[in-house]
Length: 368
Image: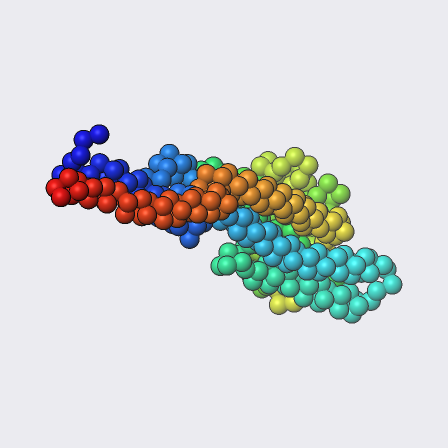
């Protein structure tokens, strides 16, 4: 081996190895301090890209869990209001059954009607004021879309309905019975279904009205009973009509529906009139109660669906987190071993470098 002094190959080799062990030591310390195997793209570019996608999915799924919990809250809020509406409808039915017996006096019926009216008013108030984060959940027919996934189109719809005394068909419910009041009808006030005036002498009809001036339609049902359908205070109401003073037959109303005669009445006035009792009130109440029960069943079903969604999302988050961990998390045992190895190499390299630097000094002995 040539004896040279300009280039100390042993020293250069030792320095190179020392630099490598220094870099390995720094990498091991960085991974141990962060707990991650990938701290920058240079550590593993492909692994970093995959882990980043996993992170996006995990964050999306975690937010979807929150959305699903909000969906449950909406359903629970709505169902809570429906529980009270159900209680009120049940009480209205109970009162209606009480009113159906013939032992009640007119005063009794009016008292029962007052409580029914209050119960129906409470149904309207509950429906109007039930609110979830600014959404009137019973104020209109609507569908709320809940995002329950990390990607587009992963949604569940919560169907809500407008629910009040009117939509339940109970806004005109009456059990107090008619209170008759005479109203004079001038010649020509009665018209058939095509609008043609029915001629004849002035007649006197008996109707039941909540106001003083009405425009309504005189109808004859399949049982032969006459009544007036009128709009009073923005609501459609039905009032009794005495058929003893004038006669309307099925044939007089060419524009009427099958089985009914229709005529128009105008100018009727009265200062003391009231609603007639609702025909088949229990059937009307049962129909309204069915609407409430149907909506409650839908909400219960969607709550169970949200529970399933949340459980599934939780499982997905666990699995994706485990997959991400295998890619980017550091194996602490391996990194401790790497750090220890690098430290030993550093110490050995430093010692060897010192010896390598002394090799050129042997050339001096040739000059002595």
